Length: 156
Image 1 (cartoon, rainbow, N blue to C red):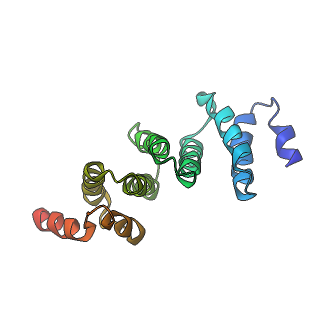
Image 2: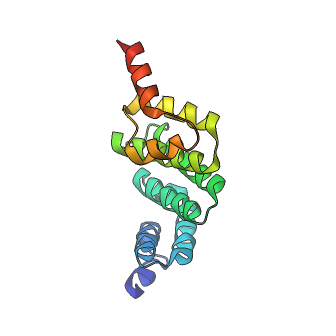
Image 3: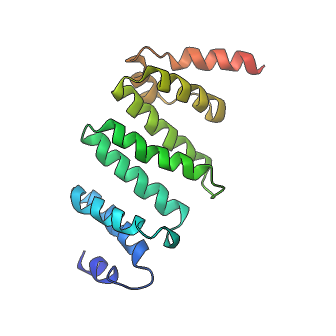
């Protein structure tokens, strides 16, 4: 930890080091410190790659999700989704995870209309919704499997 903090103190690669320090702090359960490192790194956007944004924004979103601050979590998960639309290279898997996180937050917020629209978008772009998200969506009256079957029927 001391080495990472020393490296993060002004060297050209300090933004990347801050992101990695945030990852390390999260794993140690020191979430408040991790959030501070992510925010410092994100203040200088020109120095970070798409994957650093993705991971930082996603981890900040999950921090708020675990705090029960679901609307704030959605804001951060949405940033990951917007990054995918900028032409930056991210894998299909990365894009799907960002939308899946939003589905969980919408379910926690009981935002049925947003959940339905996002579920349709997910199915159209990525296929069947994974089990944890399907289970969460049922709590707000959304049957993702029925929607999947319906949309697959239209595609043929």
